[in-house]
Length: 314
Image 1 (tube, one colour):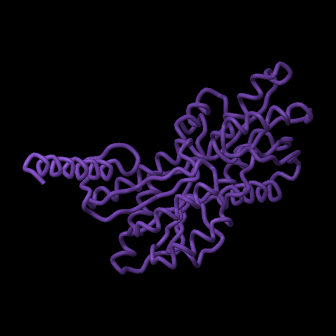
Image 2 (image 1 turned 30 degrees about the vertical axis):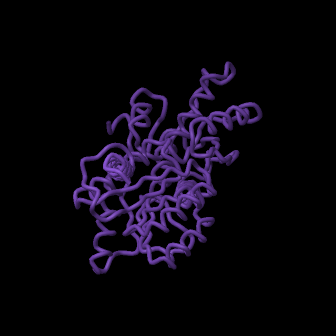
Image 3 (image 1 turned 60 degrees about the vertical axis):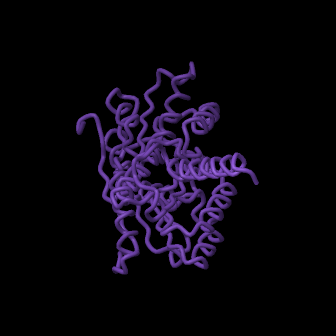
């Protein structure tokens, strides 16, 4: 090889090295000044098309980058198969820990077993998994209490409400919210009637379409309980786009306390949203991971308190 060829090979190798370093620096969600030489963590969300999960990711990332480490953020896009493939790839990379917000709380067992075999600890965030023995810890809002608070807010203004529930029953957090909601109806508001429970997908678009269908055949409806703010806003959009329903008094309550949800409460589109604290949840989960890696005992289940957000409390 002549001198010119050797110099060309060195330049090509240098470009490849710089390109690899650049890719490492872009791992995660958004740009960062954190070094790329620390420990690697990963988080998988059921969707990032929800401000709640964006904030939760921010909370985790703040703590990890404060340690000089890095976070890879994955979006399952509400697709269990994509989530499974993403997790399989990440587990092979041997991160220090994985934070998991599962699409299906019972359908993720295979990924949990794979992580356990690989020695990669998993901490669930926002919603639990069915196989609690396969994860190091679970951090979530007090979702039963959130459902209770939503029911109490609705019952205070419509104790005889005839309502529909927009659910997301593949997620444990939503199962708990509906459980808490129904418990308050049984205890305090026996005249409140749930006419239908439908799957709203946890999204504005799906809930809007489902609500349009409900409005076509449920005529005595006067309230909605949605398991999150996107679902609630989808229900509101469906009601206001219907000539038959737009002027009727339909009271909507939800859970999240997102920026959009709070704005909807302030301007009267929603009666109340039960506020969660995703950044705090992220901080708690990340700190648990560092305690675990340091060999310290950690709590197996952590519940983050919630509170009702109304126009009055605003």
